[in-house]
Amino acid sequence: MGKVPLETSRGTIQVPAWLFTVEGVEQKKVHVAVDPSAVTARPERVQGDIEEVMAFDLVAGQPHELLLRYGCGACDTVHGARAYETEQLVVVDVDEKDSSSGKPCPLIRKTATITVTLDRPLGDRLVLDSGTGLLVLQGLNKR
Image (cartoon, rainbow, N blue to C red; front, side):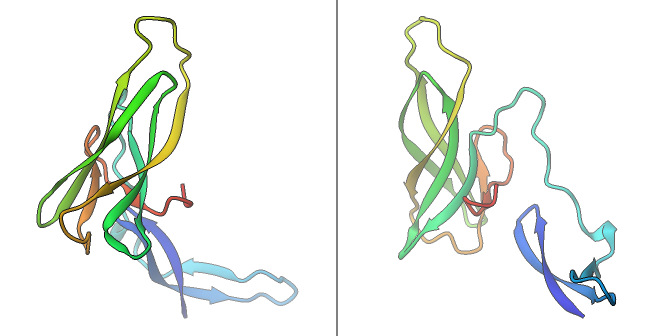
């Protein structure tokens, strides 16, 4: 028995697993020891919705600050980020505006990062994208 990481709708968790070795095979065989019915997939966005905030991380040494990875159009101008907070969750949004002034703009989606300051440390609250209502996973380098 051992533990392995498993991606869930609330981020990565460690779950029990059986670890096997096979004579003559270098790699270990891993079988998660969790009933498949206990693991559900992350909710999918509605067709046509765009997930604006894709991932977040806490800013090192700043428990009130989140670093957000977001997507925007090639001709959009970003004016900042904001957060709506409750006891159980934080809803994040990036304020952007189309600045093409009616001129042709390539259909390119850029990704960037921006910081948003919370009223209190995140703690165990969930982070949601304001546009889709989907859970934003922690770990900028994982997605």
